[in-house]
Length: 246
Image (tube, rainbow, N blue to C red):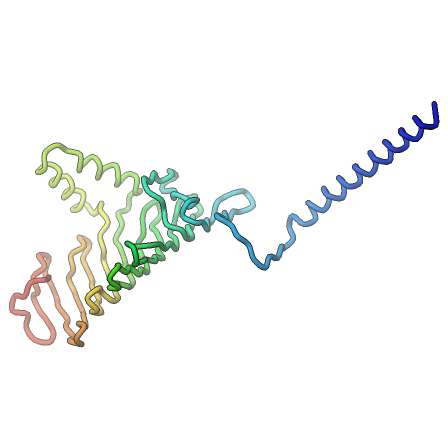
């Protein structure tokens, strides 16, 4: 073997050993830092998925373009418009269980919402700020009554009811669902309304306000008790005299 060939062989052997050592170091480093805490002073990211060791999704932090559509009763929610940016929470079944979202409302106004959901269904409690282009806003705590049915089941029943060709039949079918407690109703609102009144509204399971405590924008306080038709049956201070719920 010539001296040149021997030199080339030694070079190739040394090169191969060097590449192997570099690869081994990089491989070992990857495993060594896998469980280590990494520190970043600043990071730009469009979406972060928080998962368990087995891959189960716990939380998504995302911008609008990459926001998770949500999952209810094991089914991905079909959406026809973009979902707001924010944080979406998921429970042990893999279903969405609420979130913190925010976004624009008109050209100038905006909104923010923190809600938590019933199992296999929609929100039961939430904190919301909703502001229009003119600066008027409502903000407060809201509590909803949800049926003890998966929301996809309720949605299918409601779609079938509202798809009936006859208006009377549609109204009757929706009323049957309402009477059976299969539709979402608002049970409580505590906060500020757009007219600058602060109010506490408490409703029955049908969503009809039965107690209203308010302080108007001018400072006038009032407490009303209403029947199922919305008629004020008693009021403080003083008797209601049949005053109708606005």
